[in-house]
Amino acid sequence: MKSHTAYLSIKTDERYAVVNITSGVEAELKKSGVKEGLCLVNSMHITSSVFINDNEPGLHQDFLEWVEKLAPYDPGGYKHNLTGEDNGDAHLKRTIMGREVVVAVTEGELDFGPWERIFYGEFDGQRSKRVLIKIIGE
Ligand code: ZN
Image (cartoon, rainbow, N blue to C red; front, top):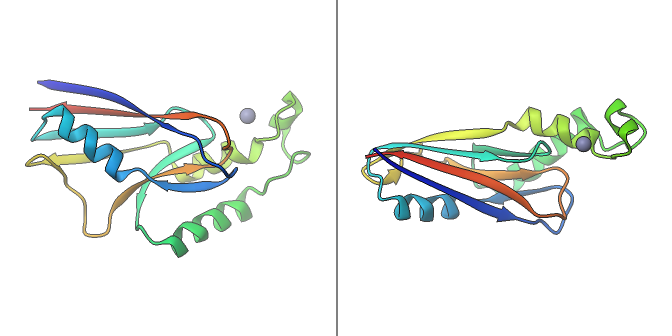
């Protein structure tokens, strides 16, 4: 069995952002040489997410506005922020949007549904963060 591990570095200009990381994952799949297997992609940070959905900018804005309604930025509003941090909202947003995705690899390609792409959701950005890619198979 082949195994390939890689890390994407991401630093967003904004505190909140959605970044399409599909091409970065596909590049690592090519390097791996795996034709049949599984590809795991996860955020290594507890204030950002990896998720699969449509590459449509209006939808990305909808996601950001939706999680802001559920867990608004509020430095005085979360017990977590008693630690001196201000990112209690970001931990909750990350949990809503998810930690990781797993995509099947078929004939050397990510076996997506028609509109599926992989996105990184940032909820406490403007600093360098990492995404783990682990590809296993034959
Ligand atoms: Zn925190």
